Length: 203
Image (cartoon, rainbow, N blue to C red; front, side, top):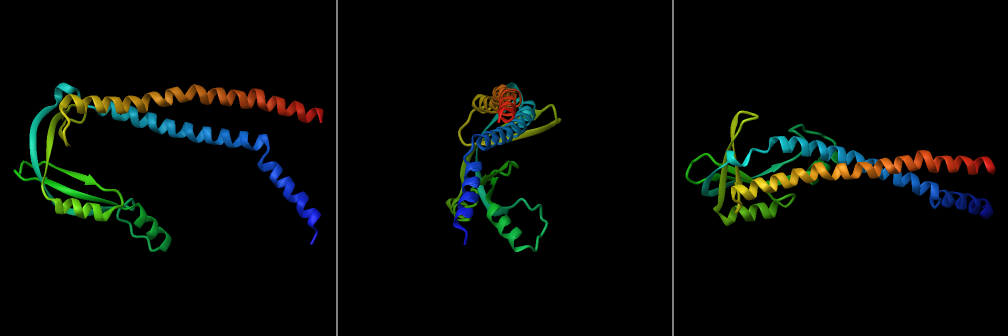
């Protein structure tokens, strides 16, 4: 076995991995992924901000008692069965467990509590029995329908302020990230690439 040839080949491979050019490309790739995530967050924030009902539209319906009906399992498969063992394992790992609640006073209110992938926690929550929650109702003028939200302790103002603050963050953070990304692109294509080409010409 030619150890010298292996050493030279290994040194070349390690040299490429630990080179400055390699890490700069990794940085550019991660920054681009971050920009894509920022665009998705901005779109979600914009759509969410438009869907927020004005504070004056909400009516506090008081505290209601809710009874747990059943534990259900959800997945991202949309009801499509996949015979692949790998796909079934992936679906099994991504399944989420929910507890369905309905109002005891038969007002029609209900909500779902998510317990992630823990079936045991969902079953324990169902065994704990009835819970009390505040109901906030509003008329969604954009979609022309009545909506309601079920909260543990929040008042109308707290619920409205938390929604506005959440969607405002989704809108603001991408706008702050964009200038940094553009500066990185300018530096890479206008400065780094030019210096790299000059050094190659000199060598």
